[in-house]
Structures are given as C-alpha cells and as structure tokens.
Length: 317
Ligand code: BDR
Ligand code: CA
Image (cartoon, rainbow, N blue to C red):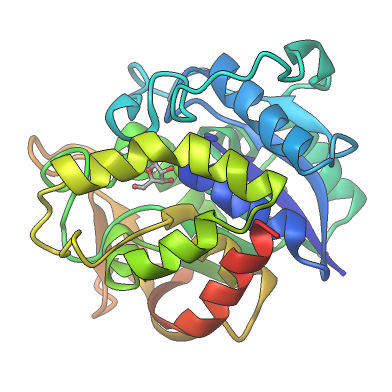
C-alpha cells in the first residue's frame, strides 16, 4: 500500500481530495494535518472530522496545525468555500474537536516521517505553512519523504486570489518558498491553470453528485455553495465555466495515488515571488535553468482525465 500523509486546509475541494484518497484501495493514510487557509484553523479541523465521519474512517488521526502564515494574516476563501469552509451547511451531529489528536500537526509530520522514513508520500492541498515549519524545525524532514504532491501555484502568472497569485501560494508565499527549496524528492505540482485546463464537465458533475449514497448526499450539500459561486461569479477568462467545474486539490491527490494519472509535465526549477507589489505569491518557472536550482519539480501539464473521473466517482460510492 502507498503510505500517505495529507496536509489540508479543508475546504470543499480538499474534502473531495480526501474522499478520493479514502476510497482508494491501494492507500493507507497515516495522518491528516490541518492548516489555516480556506477558513480558520478550527473550522478546517472540524471539516476534516466531518469528512472522516461521513466516510466512517474516524480511526485516522487528525492534527491541528498552523493558524496563520509565517508573515501576516491568513486569507480565507469564503466566497467559494463558505464561511465555515464547507459550504455553510452545519451538521448538528458533527464530531467534536475533542477528537483531534493532542500532538501538534508539525510534530506529527516530523514523527510520522521518521517512523516511515523513505516510504511516505506527502500530499499538500493548502498553504504550505505546516510543511515549512517542519522543515525549519528539522532540516532532515524532507529527506524522509518519498514523494511530494502539491496543489498550488500557477504557471502562466494567472492568479485566482490576486492578479498573479494562486490561493495556496499567495496565502503564505514564504512557506511555499521554503518548501520548494528544501525538498529534493520527486515533487509534483498541480497548478491553478493545470486544474482549469482539466475541468470536469457539468454532465459528469450531475452524475457524480447523485449516486444516492451517504457520501454523494454529503457532497451535494457541501458543494452547492461553491458550485453556485462558480456559475455566477467566476470570470476567469482562462476557462469557460459554463463547460464544467474543477476540483483543484483532487488532481494532486490523484497524482499521489496513481502513477499513471500524470501523462505530461515540465521538469524545472520552481520558485515563488516574495516581494513584487503585484506579483507576490506568484510561482515562477525557471525553464531555462537560470537559477541553477538543485531541486527541480514536475509541473503537471497533462493527465488521464478518464482515470480522474473513475477516482472521483469511486470517492462518493
Ligand atoms: C486552492 O485554493 C483553495 O481555495 C482550494 O482548496 C485549493 O487548494 C486553489 O487555488
Ligand atoms: Ca485546499
């Protein structure tokens, strides 16, 4: 089985990505660490517990992590994910935060990576604060990780939260920078543009959401707000939103659980703009190797969309 450690800022698409992993028969999830991002850290933790509850997987340990980026305050993506991060459809039977592990997420990342050194794939679908703190606390941490999968950044300077910034990187650019410099294991990045190019048609969405299962019913409820937002407010010219929707974080997860999913990538040095007035948080691809970075990343360009649909369908069965 593939051993996964998953770091999330559990909004709607993080929940979808988690459910993809929970349904994958070839995966063992060693722990889920929570990071600020789409909502407050408390809401993020609550959301992960709700996902595990609906999937009947409460045995998976959940850890509370960073409540803010290394600098400044967190951005919250309330427009898309709702104030609580999960579409504002509270569940009175949701498990309480007392079910979180007592250990801090960063310490859990360090401990679990040490216990399974060289065997763990790390999937990060939120701002990279927990990962950066782990690197700064123990510089040997990256060496213990087998593969790193990130949803974040952009490749054509198209932003979704600032002019040039994708949410996860723009939320904590310094952490993104620390992580991209520190990890020299194979690193796969699903950027904002990549996810938009590989949208799923609305026709698929309608089939996906009405599978008459507890999980699909949960997804229908929590994603209603974000799907409405997609239809009404999204004016990104890079994608025709009348054609379909994206589950950004699920692409990084699909890459982690199925090697055949990624069918094309650019292998190059990758960095993050930290000081531009318009471009802070923008991912920069060094395709001509000017920076001579030791660590190169695979920036995804192509994937097997049929395989993706299968993984997504299975997630709500
Ligand atoms: C990313 O930002 C968040 O709002 C989503 O969960 C995803 O991780 C997309 O830019
Ligand atoms: Ca996310």
